[in-house]
Image (tube, rainbow, N blue to C red; front, side, top):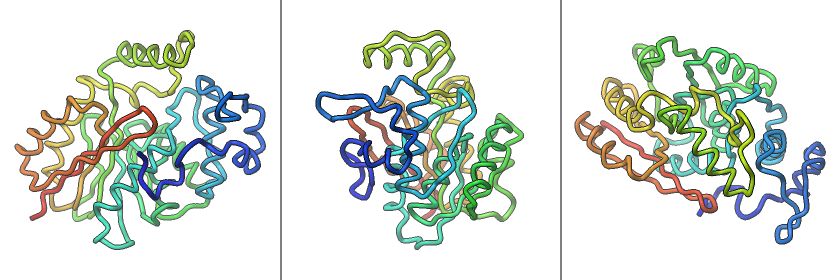
Length: 285
């Protein structure tokens, strides 16, 4: 189930959303149960749905993405923020967050500022993605969102968190796969589930290489994040990351224990049939 405060309970109110963003009308198709739906294998339709959701619920009027970049699921991203807000609610309203791998979509800062009033620093190894995110922030006339380029692709927190800098929380949506082949096999599975065959060089969830895969896949990424987080125990109150597979949790728990984490929480989330979880940890006593 989605977080009780999540605005996206049940089916998308597509007719209402189309009133907010009339461009959505051309993508609406009949559905025997829901009345209307969209073709979720059509990247343009999914992007337009996201634009409508952001405008209707979050007052984000400008949202575009470079071709091929990750189109984020808005309800799931909002869910992660809301559950983390429950974890750190004692910090009060002035929360400062570091988003590792912010991406061109800048989705966590956009949602977190609107939903919770948080301020954000977003970092990414892809300079083009950083510049695109900066443009989104500028065109939406937003404040309290800063974007930084991570110059060292082998580091996560190093080179981003400055000396003496403090954050209440870090968040991350890590690359899930170990290779392009693995990402494409998962996309093939999703397309078959939707009753389609995979088109050439197309992933129905979108995404550039740095967004979807890295050497060693999610386990290697988590191991690096856990170990490196210990170096910034005095800079960050709580660290957190999405973990796509429950099978990766035991190994990650061992990494955090070895790093010296004093407390860890696993937050289960679910949207429809899709299950995921957030792991949050701290070094504070």
